[in-house]
Picture 1 (cartoon, rainbow, N blue to C red):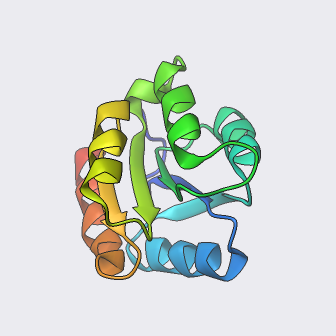
Picture 2 (picture 1 turned 90 degrees about the vertical axis):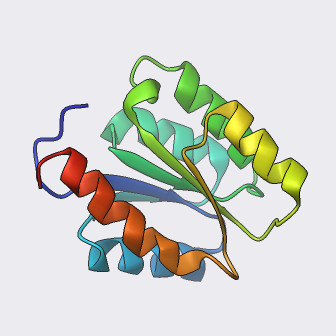
Length: 131
């Protein structure tokens, strides 16, 4: 994966705008740049193609396309194999977690109990890029 900046570039997709903003703030605090916020799955997929981020944070329940559909589309794209995908959701069912990993998610975090783990993931991504 080529990263022109030592700060990884992220797309955040969540239909709850205050939460998307909170995720963005946390990513920036962790050393990332947030290049786009998407309010639904279709917008997330369009922004992924336009901005070519290093990472994507996806909610599962979104209008238009859900997070699983967006994840599968990202992984099927030419650039999708190189992109870090983090599912950040309120769903804690093991079957949802298993589905996310089966579809190609790199991380699956529960919004309630694992939210701040985003702060650990960004530095790891920066280290992989030499940042």
